[in-house]
Image (cartoon, rainbow over all chains, first blue to last red; front, side):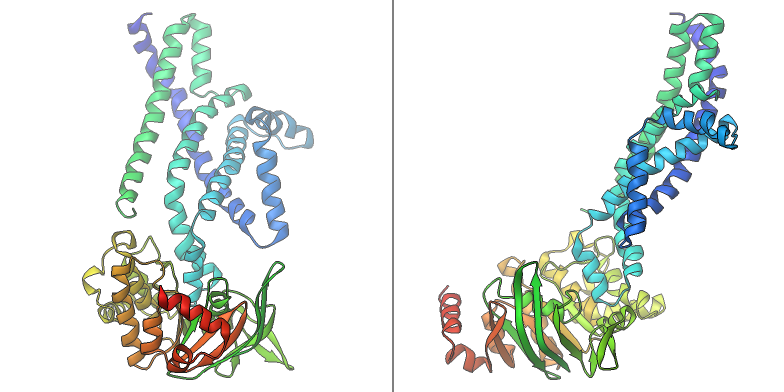
Length: 217
Length: 251
């Protein structure tokens, strides 16, 4: 393995890495918002909302992300919806992430002791007030560790968008490998970049957790 | 002040309350005693709508709990229940302090969200109530850093801050280490002395005798005996009451 060769190609791969970051950030933001809404649906007292939410998580978690990407990118044009690779990748990853995030949010909210809701209602808070002032703030603390895991998984799973002709970190590595036939150097460089990105996530979430741990025992 | 009429409640097929009738006058300290599983906690939870009875009525003053009377029947309204709950303090066995808020913030919470007071004003009232329960020096502590007895006193302050007309206590000392029980009881005794109307479910017979104006003995979902503490404790009429008191007082 030629380390100098590897270092030389790092900056070229960095461009693909930037696309990976962009996609991951978009799907974290959109997926979290959507996931939160779906979680509230799953916890709702309304049967219709609950059924929709359950169907969503069941369908999305029960099929592979790659299939979902193919469905959006290759399937939807059949019904007149043609998306750019970037749009298809962002939408596919967001929809996929939302299902997993919804389960994390739902689990965290359900893990809050029933007494918290009862105490809130007892001082006259409405169901909504109790949820938004008491239950959800406590649940958010419990979501942090599993969300950290989920975001790291998303970053790595984003490599699947290479299959719908997005030029992300994984795809750039493949292209450079075809051009240079130096797989060991190229893929090592790509691995280093992935590690760098996931480490940033781990450290960030670790420090958020540590800060919150000071408040609660 | 508070009136309960023919209250029935079952959990699944298990009947827990089998026709409870009860009245609480202003300034009374009603102590509810009875073996576990007798339905006393469920009764208390029906008094602020945490449990919805299968049949029967609860009146707060002249108003039915959780609704308005339209054409002779009670129509449930969440907003009315919320308003009434703000006037009914509830103290739980397991304290249920909001764990993400400090002691002070716990007491301020209802003042801000329910009473819509300004922060500064809420803080002033909350500090006064914390002083009332002797915990001014713990204002900035999170619940996890407080002892059980301290948590329970903060919980009492949280209820008092709402200026309730009546306070409900659901076995407030049962989850406490024995040496912490006294502090909570003395706060409750002070409250009684100040004229607060109270309904207390407890196993603290000393408290019942000393502070209670009336004692109710419950078993198997029914009120079996009712009277002044000295009557119920020293001259119980019902055999089940005698049995229960013998067991409790000889322990």
